[in-house]
Length: 112
Image (tube, rainbow, N blue to C red; front, side, top):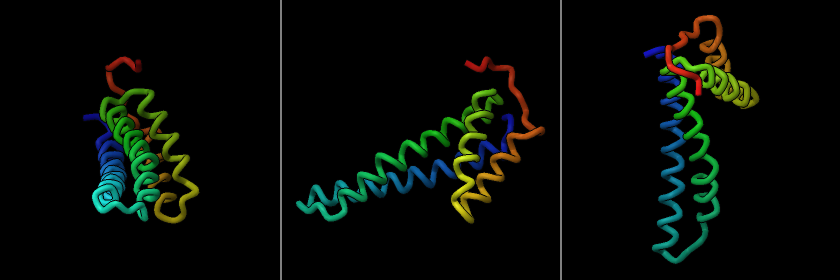
């Protein structure tokens, strides 16, 4: 496994996003069964916004594990987007950016 620290960080973040997307799905289902729509909007946002962000992290983890160029670039892009989220996301974004620096382990797989 190449770039194990970066791969683990992306997996951890994607797991957190998937957890909250799952909570959003549960809110939607609970509202459907109860006939209410109080939390459906929040649940829909969780499912449709937070879920895809989790997918980006999951996909970046695959690229980091394989050591591909697109995995490095995707990790850098995600790290840059996380910087304005002071303080926690800023620290995580800096960590992602430092892990894609000079210590990047490139793999033998094609970048396609």
